[in-house]
Length: 475
Image (cartoon, rainbow, N blue to C red):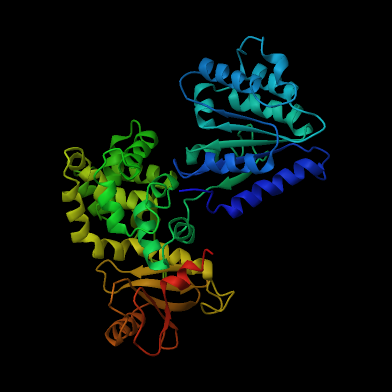
C-alpha cells in the first residue's frame, strides 16, 4: 500500500494545537501538550510521523523500550543529540543524564525559543512504570520551561487505562494536556485503502478491525476469502501475530482475565455462562476479570435499551480486531504453523454467516449513531442507539433508537439487521419486526421501523439502509 490513508480529523486536531503554539494562545504561554492513546498497532506513531512530515518542523522523536530507566534515559539523550533541533549539536559530548529532571532540562535548553518545534515521547507508560518520579519531573519541566517555549509536546501510549489516568485529578500532569484517542481505521477508510465497495469493505473491517498493519498486507481490491487464503498460509502474517502480541502486552500476568476474554470471544455473553466457559471460575474472580477487561476497553458491558430498567447485562468483545482473532485465528494458529491453514479457512467458512451477523451489529449501531437525526436519516430526537433483549431472548431486537440510554424517555425507532448475500429484507422479516416492536417497553404502533440490509429490501412500510448508507456515516 502506498500513501497515507485517513486520519483527517486527528491530523486536523494536531494542526490546531500547533497553530496555538505558533500564535502563543491567549495565556502568553505557547507550549502545548497532547496525550494520544489508542490500541496497539492502531497507527498512533505513524499518525505522528505523518504530522511531523507535513509540518516540516525540527523535532525530537523518542520511543521508550521499557528495559530500564537508565536505558531509556540514554536513548532519550541520543535522540536529542542527533535531532535537527538548532542547538542539539552542543550536547553531543555530554554524558547521558542520570535523572529525568536532568534529561528534560537538557531538552529544554536545546529547543528553539523563537520558532516552533515538536517533541514526541512514544510508549510513555514504560517511562511511568520504570520511574515513579517521571510524572513529577515532566510536570515540573512543562510548568517551568516547556510551556513558555513554542513547542508541541506529544505523549503517546498504548496502555489506554494508564494514559487516561495520567490526566486525572491528583496526578502531576492533570489538565496540562489535551487528550486524543486514535481509533482503528473506520469502514470508509478501509474501503478507500483497499479500493473495495462498501459491503466488501465492511467484511474487511470485521476481519482486520481496521488495523493498518493487517490492511497493508491485504491485496488491493481483494475480497475476504482471497485475503484469508493468503494470510493463513503464513504464520508470520499480521492477521495472526498481532492478536497474541496485543494480549501479551495487555495481560502479561493476568491469566484469568485472558481466560474470561477467551470465553467471551467464543460467544458467551452472560455473566453466568462466561464463568462456566472460563472453567468454572468463582463469581468474584469473573467480576474482577470483567472489571479489568472493561477498564482496558477490551470488553463492552451493555444493557438493553428501552423505557424500563433492566439488569440483563451482556458482554461482547469491544476491540474489532480481537472479535475475529479470538473466534477463529487464535484457536487456529497451531494448525497454520503446521501448514494446515486450509483447515482454519474451512472453519471460518462454515461459521462466517452466523458470526458476521452478530459481529456487524455493533458496527451498524455506531454507524447509525453517527448518522443521527441531523441529516434526516433517522427520526428526530434519536440520540442513542442500542439493542433490546430479555433473559430468554424473546424478543431480541437488533436496533433500538431512543432519546437517551440505557433507560429512555422516548423510543424513536425499532430496527432489524439482515446482513446476508442475495437475501433481501422481506415481508416475513417485517412481520417479525412488528411483533418485536409490540414487545418493546416504550414502543407502540406508531414507532418508526428500520431495516439495515446488505442485499436490499422488498417490504413496504419500513425505512431501509444499505451498506452504502452506512459507509457514508464515516465519509
